Length: 346
Ligand SMILES: Nc1nc2c(ncn2[C@@H]2O[C@H](COP(=O)(O)OP(=O)(O)OP(=O)(O)O)[C@@H](O)[C@H]2O)c(=O)[nH]1
Ligand SMILES: [Mg+2]
Image 1 (cartoon, helix red, strand yellow):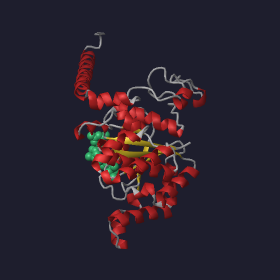
Image 2 (image 1 turned 90 degrees about the horizontal axis):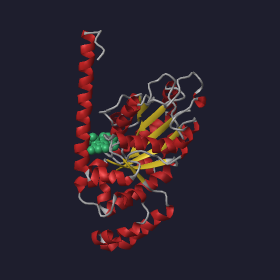
Image 3 (image 1 turned 90 degrees about the vertical axis):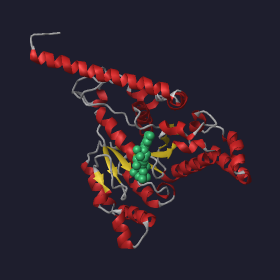
Image 4 (image 1 turned 45 degrees about the vertical axis):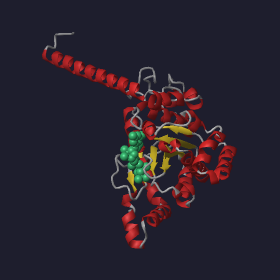
């Protein structure tokens, strides 16, 4: 069964960088992955592309041929892709039925909030057997201002209602959050979205005329009770791993490495039995249904890493990297010595 992620979010929120980060992470884990660029304006693609919308249509062509501006051109490209869905379907088939596919979308928010083309394409993919999750990225700096935070909540809720997929909202670039000033509350207040009435003070001081409207929007978001956030710092391996576990849980994907593939000890027994019959030390059911575990799975840990004790953690990480570098150098030296003196076993 094919699994995948529809990576959406506002312009510059880090979608393409996330796709590249995930491509590298899956490479390190020996998990197959393919990235599909669906942004017809994405000229500097950081990741190796399995399928690229550029071979179907580009934004420039759409603008020139149809006499449209950049935003109208983008909508045209998505409508064109929807009309030529078989182009996408054929190339996806070539990736195999067990592919894991990331769809990198353009940053125009209307594509994931009210325009129908992306939604229709997603529905066709789901019908063809894809188990998809929407991964909606929002720049974490919005949480440093109450009114911007409200707009991010509304945008996220709207995308959830529109795309109708298992949905994971993500506060991206959380590593930069400290540089935008002090937060009024701890990070868990913003990620858990439990009681927005605490925002009243900041909202009434920034825009007193609209306090009542803002509070009405807050209670609407609370009434739905759908919006919550994960956090992401793309260069932090633990952060990427945590998000991977959350997404796997949302799509119901449990990856069992094939026998013989290099995996952490005890993960899989090296037999030729079908994957469903092989033991998995991480326990398949716990992985699929239990709460995500590990570093960065608790938002208070994220707060400590990037807000409360960032300098100390940075220094600790640097020391670890130095130590790893030394170990690699020592191992290389030893193997050179062994090559020169094959009889020497030290
Ligand atoms: N510090 C930091 N920077 C990030 C992170 N993720 C992305 N960025 C930076 O954010 C900028 C925008 O990233 P992109 O990946 O191009 O964003 P995008 O959402 O694909 O942008 P559009 O496709 O134009 O909508 C780049 O300079 C990235 O290096 C992150 O986790 N931490
Ligand atoms: Mg991009």
